[in-house]
Length: 200
Length: 293
Image (tube, rainbow over all chains, first blue to last red; front, side, top):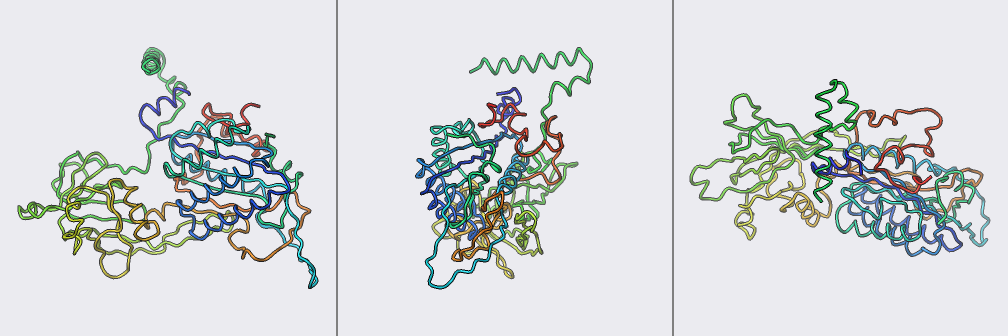
């Protein structure tokens, strides 16, 4: 801890932590997670992003990811500590934009003529990437560390769930790719767009 | 425990004495941190104490109370602005003794003691959320302002079971705004502001207008306009997969383009892609898995 940090702590300034976690799940059975993710995202949209509802969404998402622990493939995280609220807010905005540009937010859909009475078939994705951005006040050692490790990541997700019931988050954002069942994310696309991922 | 504190003090004292001996322009290099004032806290220059209140205004765009005070010392501004105001009702005895509405000021906080019929001017901002089509961010825009009056302790409430609690200073949140007609009572109360918001939430199943205005919501992808039951095929010849995102924040942001915070943050060029963004490594307090490389 640098002298500046110690001094800020000493004079009682609020410490803001902004953190982003990437989790990459791989396997033939990961696709149902998309259902959890979409359900929560729609819940957030319906309430116009009420922080309490977003907190619930974060908890559901983290619990969902923990359930699929066997499929965790790689992960990465980054974050920063601020002593100024506006700087933290800017960083959250920056991370949101950066996460948003890693996938197609406006895909062009292919018109596909499906003949009547043919069985419906959907391609199932092998890969899902979830990006979680949170900002909160105080200190959380489980998050402020290297999370490219099975144990550390488990602890971090549990800590995120616990934190929701201890205090309010100041910002929560959840991104995921692909968007829906029937859409795919290939390994090549991951290598191109998520170069920082580290295998677990 | 005391060792680091003493060490810091010695460092500070030593650095000051060095400055005193050396040239004065070395100050800037010694202290790279800037201690900017938090702009959220309004500046008041009124000495702590009790003052009668002439008029009170509450603005629900930022939750700020503006009090016009009487008997302020000469030379100080008679308006007191605060977002941290507790309220309590004057007891009947105090009113009988001719006590008027007054406020106890302590720094930037205040405790206002109100008569039953005291009316706080309530400025309601009709807001609209506009979605910025470029970023997908929803921004709150004030469409028009309406003004009304709010009497927190008027009416039947005072005599009810809550009665005795009203005389203790607590935080209050105004009731839901209705145009035309004055507001009486309160939407929520509590020993802390958060508790007051929480009690408003249990009563109304939503958050107060003030809190709504503080929060910004953002979505990307198709989550907002997807019906959920249609199946589309996406062109797979793309370098990116599809995706969606939602996010809420109630953190303030720097209104203008960000000022230079760290010496290294003003770098620019094609290398400043997200991959090589120096945010994690340029600060000693950064953390993350990328740091070990």
